[in-house]
Image (cartoon, rainbow, N blue to C red; front, side, top):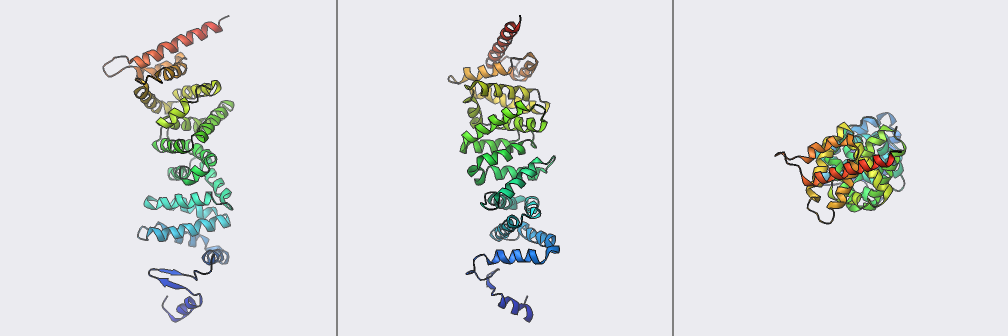
Length: 334
């Protein structure tokens, strides 16, 4: 760019240098964005080339992160203005490793934008509604949902997080941590959302996708102490308690979930067996969960220690479960 013609054009454009950077007239607010939009308008056949070039620079780890952030900021604003899904897909797919944080930041800001946010939020939802999204894209959406945007818009974020949970393995640490973070920041919103999902799943038993999303989200929530407390505090509501019991029973009947369920119930044993204030309440819930005889074989992995001793906590839950089942059976006999 040192030939005479190019130099004269740079002078005419009033571009100035500051170290390794070049700037248009900084007094003209919005000029860089306007130039970028004009570039996209004037060269419609070169969008893919321009997009890959710009995202490639942002993804290049030799480029300072501050400079890369300038690029991703300009790109998400361009994408939002033009409703250009390809740019957002490129940010989501091509910014990896240490540069992944830039994709999270850019898409979170885009989702919260007052003018264009709805389009971006719809796109996040569409990604999670896909049958088999990439694990990278699922993790990206999860990170967006637990960041500043998720804290500010928990209802919208939880909807997308719940869908993302359906694509992760039961007990996924990523999903567990996500629900834990939101439970810490927005407990009422999390409780209401999960309770509504449980209600919806019971009213639409044929919807396998909803069932998988709901059970994955529920297990993730109760896999942290904060989430467990949120659920147990809701047990006094008769209908909510019943939904909680049914969720555990469905998880125990889901082959892919059993290992994660046993792990979490073992944590409940460790946490509550010596708790004088909540042991009785937890055993009471467990007795309802294991009341159906068909579910009790799952207790074998929980009850017996390596030394073949039966743990008192689980013996108490089993006896109470058996008594409740028998009482229910007798009550239903004519």
